[in-house]
Amino acid sequence: MSAAVLVLEDGRTFRGQAYGAVGETVGEAVFATGMTGYQETLTDPSYHRQVVVMTAPHIGNTGMNDEDDESARIWVAGYVVREPARAPSSWRSRRSLVDALCQQGIVGISGVDTRALTRHLRERGAMRVGISSVSTDVDPLLATVRAAPQMTGADLTGEVTTPERYVVPAVGLTRFRVAAIDLGIKRRTPVLLARRGIEVHVLPATVTIDEIEECGVDGVFFGNGPGDPSTADAAVALVRGVLDRRLPIFGICFGHQLLGRALGLGTFKLPYGHRGINAPVKDLTTGRVEVTAHNHGFAVAASVEEPMETPYGTVDVTHICLNDGVVEGLRVVDAAGAVVAFSVQYHPESAAGPHDAEHLFDRFAELLPAQAG
Image (cartoon, rainbow, N blue to C red):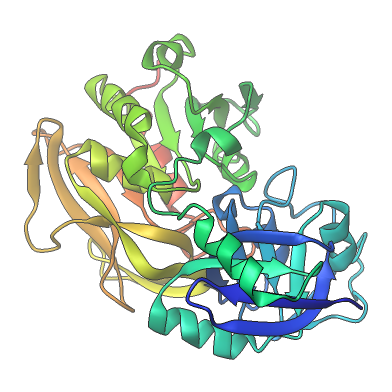
């Protein structure tokens, strides 16, 4: 097994063994706290250009199957684990995790003290990182890391969106039709919409408002995706176009940030982000606390106490993270008291669980009848 080295942009170095493809890679170092769901994490387009550190000590135990991928490929820029499984053990497994990483050219490192690495990132913040298994010379790798682009200011939607539109048919009777803008959408999202009788038209991020209207949709969904929301001016303009046409909107993660910007709110980068499947979020409209899945490094800046008036209606914060008070949900209510748009920062569609917030898809469906026809 080849030796490998991991170097953070501040010079902190960890040594281990090559895991996955042999090579060199750079990206933003982030950590994910999920005890399960590594396959969904690896194939989530939101992790594009990020090197993911898994805090769970044993990774790869259940191998890789053909059903749980959230997209057609692995998106992470690199992968860091402490102790990889010697052999997968699951009746669903079709290949080992290490084989999947090798087949797709994903450079990783194992044998790393991921607890120490995670503590470092929590104290210093997410930063650029490099992994190399072709050379363990720290200085040239550190120079490469420091020359790499940062996540702040990164416009990545065009690198992950679908090149062509496609349709996911409704399960059973088609009750509604929704446009889902692919900013890095996960496969499970249109599946959950379809289960509610919604025919889902998944459209490229470059779609125009006129093209959306031509689909004859009853609402619009803006999903997750990678990059800095402050760069997504075209997508923000599209959200405003949808609001102008009074089509109901449901946004999650990146879509939540786009809705916030469209309403005049700002966004900012979190010190180290929220990534995992165990974050407590309080729904301020019901008082209920849900355990939720997260994957975001940016957040919306909004006041929990003061609703904001906009041309589209009154905007208020509906959800907050109980760990740090970050805004996790927004709602737009028009003058007649009707909800015209809502969003959450977390992932109610999480395939790996928990599924506490899956009811939000029902909430979206409830907004559609008044528009259907």
